[in-house]
Length: 287
Image 1 (cartoon, rainbow, N blue to C red):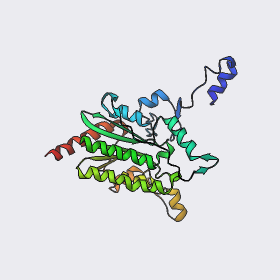
Image 2: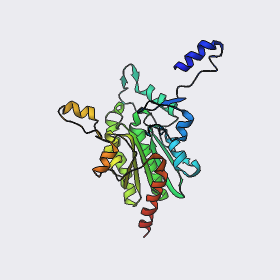
Image 3: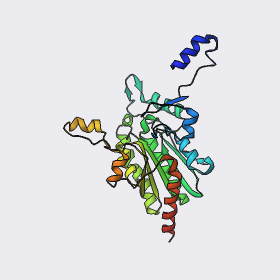
Image 4: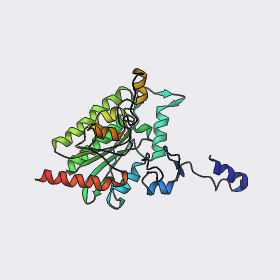
């Protein structure tokens, strides 16, 4: 309940149920703290008009703007709870949190897969949602990535991977760690067929996800201000307290300067830039 709801209930207590405001009606910018109405949030693709911060956004909003006319076909993949240790933490269970995330995000797991046309180029796009258990990778999420690779191979089309992840899913322990090299099998399938694998690193792209599939793209793009790395600055400072980090440490701008990212692309320009790159590479492959 926010302050607007409380004030309305004081003034019009009999109307309180019909005037309840949903929790996601307003989204707060994590940088300038500006409140953004949900309709404006979708229209700007999750980019703050005040400070241009690129906020975490649902893959469906991305797909709506990346595919021509927002038309795409969702590719289903097998998703099941893998809880070999009956994991519990802070009075919660992994099973409950997994099911809640499915219900809250309307996703099978941390990936959403779609296929369609991007500026008349047939592509398959697989995108993560950080709000699904931190975009973590477990056994079923790895299956989703393999499914996307198989579709790209079967249909001879580029695969675009949009990453927003904290890494391996700790609840699944060794099963999650084994999922990371498993996804590399899918990338090798693409390379064997000489297919384009384009990665888009968004905030945050960290942990084992970035260290594996996030760093192996034919082309690696990044959104402005995205945090990209393996271990975060806090973890590193615990082991090396004397280390002084630069202001842009693990940001996409510093990685571009160091050659780990090919280009930084504003979210509003992603469709045009990716399709431009695909045309050049597909023309080269055809030749």
